Image 1 (cartoon, rainbow, N blue to C red):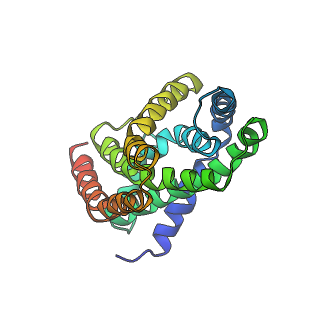
Image 2: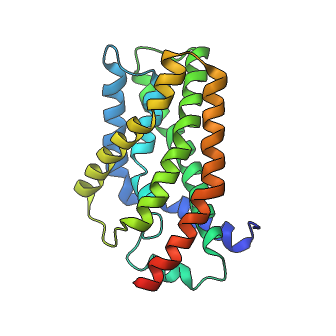
Length: 219
């Protein structure tokens, strides 16, 4: 499968939508929550807290992939591009949005953190996102076609969804906690993330594309 002009357009549009003006209130509240999180004694490492907050702000990108607007699924079906290309482009936009948003959040969270990250924490933060991102994409892809949300609410609904996303991030971080934090096994942590990457590319993208076609046919 090639990543052509149409896929690049979908990628750019989805990435731009992640930082729309109506997202600012929710992202601001999440940034404040991140500052409180790192200020707590016994809280997570600052970089891990940044990732948790950033990923929590991307619920719609993960879990409502094909229905960011009420008629998006139908509009996507009119494009001269395969569903696999659409899903891959949107997943890659989500990956990039997570990186950009984490960089923005880190400016506030790390500034107020009483614990500045050391080299070991940079390693831990990198391995955290390596092990968490691809399971989140796979779960989000599945939820996007099994539980599509045609209508989206305001800031209150977005905050509730962000809280649910935060819980999902914590659940997906359990392998990281066991393999890296408790067992201190970096090679196994890297291997786990690689397996999740392959599973996302080989199974999730293809399976989500097939389910999206069936979802469109039944709508």
